[in-house]
Image (cartoon, rainbow, N blue to C red; front, side):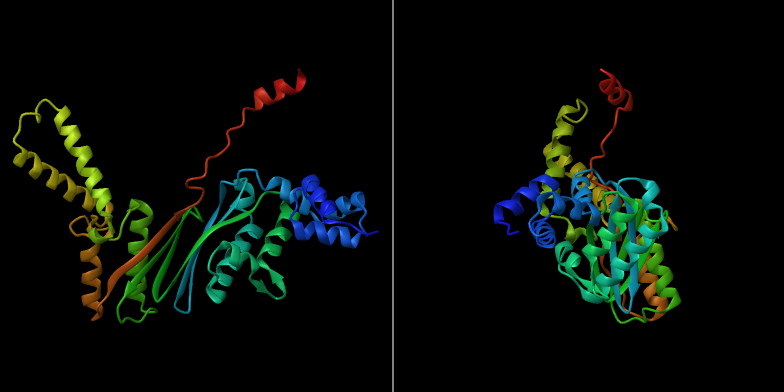
Amino acid sequence: MAFTAKDVQALREKTGCGMMDCKKALTETNGDMDAAVDFLREKGLASQAKKASRVAAEGTVCAVCENGVGVVVELNAETDFVANGDDFKALALKVAKIIIAQNPADVDALLKCTENGQTVEEMVQELFLKIRENIKIRRFVRYEGNVVNYVHAGGKIGVLVKFDGEVDANNADFITMGKNVAMQIAAMNPAYLDRDSVPAEVIEKEKEILIAQMKEDPKMANKPDAVLGKIVEGKIAKYYKENCLVEQQFVMNGDITVGKYVADTAKELGADIKLSAFVRMEKGEGIEKRVDDFAAEVASMVK
Protein backbone atom coordinates (compact mmCIF):
# COMPACT_ATOMS: atom_id res chain seq x y z
CA MET A 1 0.00 0.00 0.00
CA ALA A 2 1.43 3.38 -1.02
CA PHE A 3 1.53 6.34 1.35
CA THR A 4 1.86 10.10 0.91
CA ALA A 5 3.51 12.99 2.73
CA LYS A 6 0.14 13.67 4.36
CA ASP A 7 0.19 10.16 5.81
CA VAL A 8 3.64 10.79 7.26
CA GLN A 9 2.40 14.06 8.79
CA ALA A 10 -0.69 12.36 10.18
CA LEU A 11 1.44 9.68 11.81
CA ARG A 12 3.71 12.35 13.29
CA GLU A 13 0.73 14.15 14.82
CA LYS A 14 -0.64 10.88 16.14
CA THR A 15 2.56 9.63 17.78
CA GLY A 16 4.84 12.65 18.23
CA CYS A 17 7.69 10.84 16.49
CA GLY A 18 10.15 12.34 14.03
CA MET A 19 9.50 12.48 10.28
CA MET A 20 12.14 9.90 9.35
CA ASP A 21 10.91 7.47 12.02
CA CYS A 22 7.33 7.85 10.75
CA LYS A 23 8.41 7.37 7.13
CA LYS A 24 10.31 4.23 8.07
CA ALA A 25 7.33 2.88 10.00
CA LEU A 26 4.98 3.41 7.04
CA THR A 27 7.49 1.81 4.70
CA GLU A 28 7.88 -1.22 6.96
CA THR A 29 4.09 -1.61 7.25
CA ASN A 30 3.24 -0.91 3.60
CA GLY A 31 1.41 2.30 4.47
CA ASP A 32 -0.91 0.76 7.06
CA MET A 33 -1.45 3.57 9.59
CA ASP A 34 -2.53 1.38 12.52
CA ALA A 35 0.31 -1.06 11.90
CA ALA A 36 2.73 1.86 11.69
CA VAL A 37 1.60 3.10 15.11
CA ASP A 38 2.14 -0.39 16.51
CA PHE A 39 5.56 -0.51 14.85
CA LEU A 40 6.59 2.73 16.53
CA ARG A 41 5.23 1.62 19.88
CA GLU A 42 7.15 -1.63 19.65
CA LYS A 43 10.28 0.36 18.96
CA GLY A 44 9.53 2.60 21.90
CA LEU A 45 9.80 5.72 19.79
CA ALA A 46 6.24 6.89 20.23
CA SER A 47 6.32 6.84 24.00
CA GLN A 48 9.77 8.40 24.00
CA ALA A 49 8.59 11.30 21.88
CA LYS A 50 5.57 11.85 24.11
CA LYS A 51 7.76 11.90 27.20
CA ALA A 52 10.23 14.31 25.61
CA SER A 53 8.19 17.27 26.88
CA ARG A 54 8.39 16.07 30.47
CA VAL A 55 10.85 17.95 32.66
CA ALA A 56 14.18 16.18 33.07
CA ALA A 57 15.88 18.17 35.84
CA GLU A 58 17.67 15.31 37.59
CA GLY A 59 20.69 13.57 36.12
CA THR A 60 24.44 13.61 36.37
CA VAL A 61 27.41 15.71 35.33
CA CYS A 62 30.37 13.70 34.06
CA ALA A 63 33.86 15.22 33.77
CA VAL A 64 36.66 13.24 32.11
CA CYS A 65 40.22 13.92 30.93
CA GLU A 66 42.09 11.69 28.47
CA ASN A 67 45.16 12.30 26.30
CA GLY A 68 45.24 16.05 26.75
CA VAL A 69 41.50 16.54 26.26
CA GLY A 70 38.94 17.30 28.95
CA VAL A 71 35.15 17.09 28.67
CA VAL A 72 32.30 17.89 31.02
CA VAL A 73 28.80 16.84 29.94
CA GLU A 74 25.38 17.01 31.58
CA LEU A 75 22.93 14.15 31.03
CA ASN A 76 19.42 14.64 32.41
CA ALA A 77 16.66 12.30 33.50
CA GLU A 78 13.34 12.77 35.28
CA THR A 79 14.18 11.14 38.62
CA ASP A 80 17.25 10.78 40.80
CA PHE A 81 16.49 7.05 41.03
CA VAL A 82 17.31 6.66 37.35
CA ALA A 83 20.14 9.22 37.48
CA ASN A 84 21.90 7.22 40.19
CA GLY A 85 21.64 3.96 38.23
CA ASP A 86 24.69 2.27 36.77
CA ASP A 87 23.28 2.23 33.22
CA PHE A 88 22.63 5.98 33.26
CA LYS A 89 26.09 6.83 34.60
CA ALA A 90 27.68 4.43 32.10
CA LEU A 91 25.93 6.25 29.24
CA ALA A 92 27.17 9.62 30.53
CA LEU A 93 30.76 8.33 30.62
CA LYS A 94 30.43 6.77 27.16
CA VAL A 95 29.08 10.03 25.73
CA ALA A 96 31.92 12.00 27.35
CA LYS A 97 34.51 9.73 25.75
CA ILE A 98 32.83 10.06 22.35
CA ILE A 99 33.06 13.85 22.70
CA ILE A 100 36.76 13.51 23.52
CA ALA A 101 37.41 11.32 20.49
CA GLN A 102 35.15 12.91 17.86
CA ASN A 103 34.95 16.59 18.90
CA PRO A 104 31.35 17.36 17.83
CA ALA A 105 30.43 21.04 17.45
CA ASP A 106 27.26 20.90 19.55
CA VAL A 107 24.64 18.56 21.00
CA ASP A 108 22.91 18.06 17.64
CA ALA A 109 26.21 17.01 16.08
CA LEU A 110 26.94 14.79 19.09
CA LEU A 111 23.67 12.89 18.63
CA LYS A 112 24.80 11.98 15.11
CA CYS A 113 28.21 10.69 16.25
CA THR A 114 28.59 6.93 15.89
CA GLU A 115 30.45 4.22 17.76
CA ASN A 116 30.38 0.58 16.70
CA GLY A 117 27.66 1.37 14.15
CA GLN A 118 25.33 3.01 16.67
CA THR A 119 24.61 6.73 16.90
CA VAL A 120 24.56 8.54 20.23
CA GLU A 121 20.88 9.27 19.63
CA GLU A 122 20.25 5.53 19.30
CA MET A 123 22.18 4.92 22.52
CA VAL A 124 19.86 7.34 24.31
CA GLN A 125 16.81 5.65 22.76
CA GLU A 126 18.10 2.26 23.81
CA LEU A 127 18.40 3.32 27.43
CA PHE A 128 14.95 4.93 27.27
CA LEU A 129 13.46 1.58 26.23
CA LYS A 130 14.97 0.12 29.38
CA ILE A 131 14.12 2.79 31.95
CA ARG A 132 11.11 4.54 30.34
CA GLU A 133 12.10 8.04 31.38
CA ASN A 134 12.86 11.14 29.35
CA ILE A 135 16.64 11.36 28.84
CA LYS A 136 18.41 14.39 27.39
CA ILE A 137 21.99 15.33 26.70
CA ARG A 138 21.72 18.96 27.72
CA ARG A 139 25.18 20.47 27.16
CA PHE A 140 28.90 19.84 27.11
CA VAL A 141 32.22 21.71 27.04
CA ARG A 142 35.48 20.35 25.62
CA TYR A 143 38.98 21.71 26.34
CA GLU A 144 42.32 20.70 24.85
CA GLY A 145 45.67 21.16 26.60
CA ASN A 146 46.63 21.01 30.27
CA VAL A 147 43.22 20.16 31.70
CA VAL A 148 42.19 18.81 35.10
CA ASN A 149 38.73 17.47 35.92
CA TYR A 150 36.77 17.18 39.15
CA VAL A 151 33.36 15.71 39.97
CA HIS A 152 31.62 16.65 43.21
CA ALA A 153 28.98 14.68 45.11
CA GLY A 154 28.80 11.80 42.66
CA GLY A 155 27.81 13.91 39.68
CA LYS A 156 26.01 16.90 41.16
CA ILE A 157 28.74 19.28 39.97
CA GLY A 158 31.43 18.81 37.33
CA VAL A 159 34.41 21.10 36.77
CA LEU A 160 37.13 21.46 34.15
CA VAL A 161 40.14 23.72 34.69
CA LYS A 162 42.58 24.60 31.92
CA PHE A 163 46.12 25.86 32.45
CA ASP A 164 48.51 27.46 29.97
CA GLY A 165 52.23 26.81 30.13
CA GLU A 166 54.83 24.11 29.64
CA VAL A 167 54.12 21.46 32.26
CA ASP A 168 53.87 17.70 32.48
CA ALA A 169 50.12 17.15 32.72
CA ASN A 170 50.77 13.80 34.43
CA ASN A 171 52.85 15.37 37.20
CA ALA A 172 51.25 14.46 40.53
CA ASP A 173 51.81 17.92 42.06
CA PHE A 174 50.29 19.61 39.01
CA ILE A 175 47.25 17.33 39.15
CA THR A 176 46.84 17.99 42.89
CA MET A 177 46.95 21.74 42.26
CA GLY A 178 44.41 21.41 39.46
CA LYS A 179 42.06 19.35 41.65
CA ASN A 180 42.34 21.89 44.47
CA VAL A 181 41.50 24.75 42.12
CA ALA A 182 38.61 22.73 40.68
CA MET A 183 37.25 22.10 44.18
CA GLN A 184 37.47 25.84 44.82
CA ILE A 185 35.36 26.42 41.70
CA ALA A 186 32.83 23.78 42.75
CA ALA A 187 32.50 25.28 46.23
CA MET A 188 32.69 29.03 45.55
CA ASN A 189 31.16 29.18 42.04
CA PRO A 190 33.15 32.13 40.63
CA ALA A 191 31.48 33.93 37.75
CA TYR A 192 34.69 34.96 35.96
CA LEU A 193 38.32 33.95 35.61
CA ASP A 194 39.83 37.40 36.29
CA ARG A 195 39.08 41.13 36.07
CA ASP A 196 39.63 41.20 32.32
CA SER A 197 36.90 38.58 31.93
CA VAL A 198 34.24 40.75 33.55
CA PRO A 199 32.22 42.66 30.93
CA ALA A 200 32.40 46.44 31.30
CA GLU A 201 28.61 46.69 31.38
CA VAL A 202 28.49 44.38 34.42
CA ILE A 203 30.79 46.71 36.38
CA GLU A 204 28.85 49.78 35.28
CA LYS A 205 25.62 48.16 36.44
CA GLU A 206 27.19 47.31 39.80
CA LYS A 207 28.30 50.93 40.18
CA GLU A 208 24.81 52.19 39.36
CA ILE A 209 23.29 49.92 41.99
CA LEU A 210 25.85 50.93 44.62
CA ILE A 211 25.35 54.66 43.98
CA ALA A 212 21.56 54.26 44.12
CA GLN A 213 21.85 52.37 47.41
CA MET A 214 24.07 55.05 48.94
CA LYS A 215 21.70 57.83 47.89
CA GLU A 216 18.90 56.02 49.70
CA ASP A 217 21.05 55.75 52.83
CA PRO A 218 20.63 58.90 55.02
CA LYS A 219 24.17 58.46 56.35
CA MET A 220 25.58 58.60 52.82
CA ALA A 221 23.26 61.07 51.10
CA ASN A 222 25.19 64.23 52.01
CA LYS A 223 28.69 62.90 51.46
CA PRO A 224 30.75 64.54 48.64
CA ASP A 225 30.86 62.76 45.28
CA ALA A 226 34.60 62.19 45.69
CA VAL A 227 33.99 60.28 48.93
CA LEU A 228 31.18 58.28 47.36
CA GLY A 229 33.47 57.48 44.44
CA LYS A 230 36.11 56.05 46.80
CA ILE A 231 33.48 53.94 48.53
CA VAL A 232 32.26 52.61 45.18
CA GLU A 233 35.83 51.73 44.16
CA GLY A 234 36.26 49.78 47.37
CA LYS A 235 33.04 47.86 46.87
CA ILE A 236 33.93 47.08 43.24
CA ALA A 237 37.29 45.72 44.45
CA LYS A 238 35.32 43.49 46.83
CA TYR A 239 33.11 42.40 43.91
CA TYR A 240 36.21 41.28 42.00
CA LYS A 241 37.50 39.34 45.02
CA GLU A 242 34.19 37.51 45.37
CA ASN A 243 33.50 36.80 41.70
CA CYS A 244 36.88 36.40 39.97
CA LEU A 245 38.54 33.03 40.49
CA VAL A 246 42.15 34.26 40.63
CA GLU A 247 41.25 36.89 43.25
CA GLN A 248 39.13 34.67 45.48
CA GLN A 249 40.46 33.75 48.90
CA PHE A 250 41.80 30.20 48.59
CA VAL A 251 39.52 27.95 50.65
CA MET A 252 42.41 25.68 51.69
CA ASN A 253 44.57 28.57 52.84
CA GLY A 254 42.79 31.80 53.68
CA ASP A 255 46.05 33.76 53.72
CA ILE A 256 46.45 33.63 49.92
CA THR A 257 44.37 33.98 46.77
CA VAL A 258 43.79 31.25 44.20
CA GLY A 259 46.06 33.12 41.80
CA LYS A 260 48.86 33.15 44.40
CA TYR A 261 48.38 29.44 45.08
CA VAL A 262 48.79 28.64 41.37
CA ALA A 263 51.84 30.92 41.10
CA ASP A 264 53.47 29.34 44.16
CA THR A 265 52.87 25.82 42.84
CA ALA A 266 54.23 26.79 39.42
CA LYS A 267 57.39 28.11 41.07
CA GLU A 268 57.82 24.83 42.98
CA LEU A 269 57.43 22.90 39.73
CA GLY A 270 59.82 25.21 37.91
CA ALA A 271 57.19 25.94 35.28
CA ASP A 272 55.31 28.96 33.96
CA ILE A 273 51.71 27.94 34.67
CA LYS A 274 48.69 30.21 34.42
CA LEU A 275 44.96 29.63 34.80
CA SER A 276 43.39 30.19 31.39
CA ALA A 277 39.82 28.86 31.52
CA PHE A 278 37.32 26.94 33.60
CA VAL A 279 33.79 25.63 33.39
CA ARG A 280 31.47 24.60 36.21
CA MET A 281 28.30 22.62 35.52
CA GLU A 282 25.70 21.81 38.13
CA LYS A 283 23.03 19.31 37.24
CA GLY A 284 19.64 20.82 36.58
CA GLU A 285 20.74 24.44 37.08
CA GLY A 286 18.39 26.77 35.25
CA ILE A 287 15.77 24.07 34.70
CA GLU A 288 12.42 24.84 36.30
CA LYS A 289 11.26 21.72 38.08
CA ARG A 290 7.59 20.80 37.99
CA VAL A 291 5.97 20.64 41.41
CA ASP A 292 3.19 18.07 41.47
CA ASP A 293 0.21 18.48 43.79
CA PHE A 294 -0.76 14.83 44.10
CA ALA A 295 -3.71 15.55 46.41
CA ALA A 296 -5.23 17.90 43.84
CA GLU A 297 -4.51 15.41 41.07
CA VAL A 298 -6.32 12.60 42.91
CA ALA A 299 -9.21 14.92 43.81
CA SER A 300 -9.65 15.89 40.17
CA MET A 301 -9.79 12.23 39.15
CA VAL A 302 -12.68 11.38 41.48
CA LYS A 303 -14.88 14.35 40.57
